[in-house]
Length: 484
Image 1 (cartoon, rainbow, N blue to C red):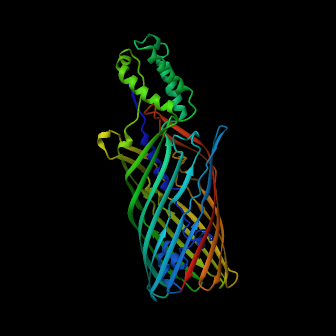
Image 2 (image 1 turned 45 degrees about the vertical axis):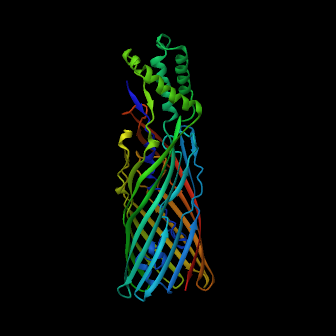
Image 3 (image 1 turned 135 degrees about the vertical axis):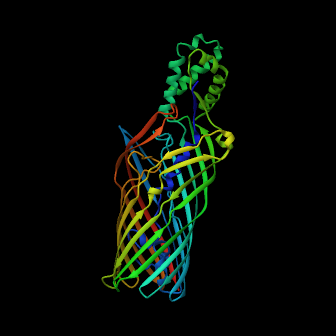
């Protein structure tokens, strides 16, 4: 007899949301208004993230800033006349920086940022529910930083990144199509044989009801929700900055890869309705009772069973990619500052995601998924103009490449090449107190792509889920800065 095991924990594969689509660059309201440039700029305390070498150029003894953004993102899927849209909750990445001048050539600071984090919520019963329904990711990084000025023109900086986070996601265990196909298979194998089987009429009726329920279902049979905490891991951020002349500064920064690790994740299971829940129990009971008899008669019926995943825990590991950025700033006059950043994102470190179960006695095999991401570039240009002594105006644009290859395109992260446009301002109502505002619009380039995965009903058979994806995002940001 074939034994079909519905591996609930395949939904853990959605942990790739740490990846593209969830690298949030909302780490300074000022720099958001300039398209996220900043590696070649002297940003005070906010240099800790962009280039720690810039921290030493603090204009005062203490520099504090904090801010928050509201990410309102939408995605749409369409294929052969069918379409579905996300209804994402608003996510709120935040940042806080505190910088301190120790000597004229030495500064220190500490920051809290959320470089990865977002939310995605597809309709509960949409066509791709077996791949993803909803997901929420939060990550946090604390970075103590030191910055040293070697000469008046040359400085270096280093920061220690302490990163942790959590993820919460849900997905269907089987697609509607597969569940209906299972009903058709059972009807084909048992339809003419059922009246002649030596079982009770009540059991025959139960089997017919099961077949009818599977064939006529319009929703996935069951859903799994996973929750996992990625405990603290360590990385680093280093940078160098050099003033070529009074008008031009160049900078280079590197943020290391960090391997996030979920040591013990928990899961829970819910059925679409009580009838389906009862059906799973009846199916397992009947097949355990008559399975050998049916096999002896040449009838090979799939057996649906769900591992005792809720009695155990899992662990997984995946990288947050490295970032190498070259930046240059140009100040043609006292009022203008122009900047360019070229960022190399090391997504090639994310080649696969493997999930292992901690309790060997449960007998659940590891789950392995190929990701095969590619290294990408992001190109950023920004400008700042000092309109008055109390008002600065900003604008920026950037182009962000997607690391996801065409045949690995999962709706859990509907990533695509993106174009971002931003604008912002800083108003100084009192000396040394600044209010920052910014607005960012991101337009994804629509993409036709597919995702290949193993059929849960027929192991070894590869299915694909594909279609056209579109995405947009609006992000207002607000920040406060104070120096003294």
